[in-house]
Length: 97
Image (cartoon, one colour):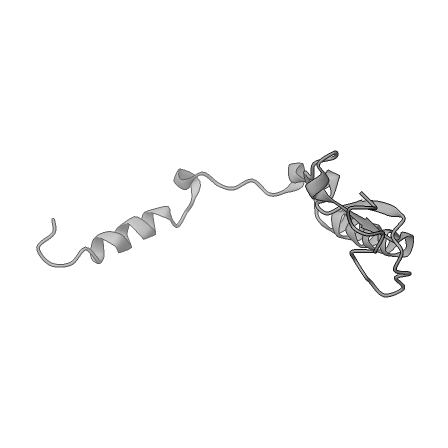
């Protein structure tokens, strides 16, 4: 992998040292990224990898896990569903029964 990317850091974030020594998953494994897929990997220097990992951890902490997201109401439970049906009939135009 290092040879493929020429030993150069692909992130180039502030504090980058330029020479890559680690592998970073482009799409984080926790977000569904493939663990062993070469297309999901890039080489990075240690400071860039540490910085990106800290940023990703912060984002994941701020986002609630899927089990905590509010449930979406079914259409028959939506109090506005009847209003939308009435409105659509009103806009059918002339000659439509």
